Image: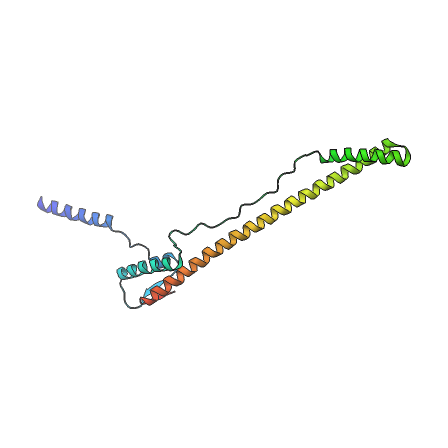
Length: 182
C-alpha cells in the first residue's frame, strides 16, 4: 500500500510539474522583428534579461513602445452636401420672364413673347449656376479629403520612423552586449 501511495504521489508530482511547466516567453527581439544570436555563449536566461534591458533602453531613447504602439491614422472622407432643391430655376425663370416682358414690350410691343423667352433664358442661367455651385462644393470636398489623407499619411510615416528608430536602438544595445543581431 505504501508503494502504491508513493507511486501515485510521484505520478501526481510529474503531472503537476508538466501542467505548470511554461514555455519560455517569446524573445523580445523577435517580437519586434530582430533576431539575436548569443555570440559570446550567453544562456537563454541571460539573453532574456539582456533583451529586456535593451527593450527598455530603446523604448526610452526612441519614445516608441512596440507593446503599445500609437494607433494608425485614417482620413475621414468628406462628402459634398447633397443637392437640395432650392427653387433657383423657378426664381430664375420668374426673373427672366419679368425682364423678358419689359424687353419684349419695349422692343416689339409683345410682352408675352418676351416673357416666354426671358423665362426660358432665366431657367437655363439658374440651372447653370446650380451646376457650377455643385462643382465647387465637390471640389472643396475633394481638397478636404486630400488634405486629410496627407495628414494621416504623415502621421503614419512618423510612427513608422519611430518604430525603425526603436529597432535600431535595440539592435545597437544587443550588439553592445555581445549578440549578433539581424
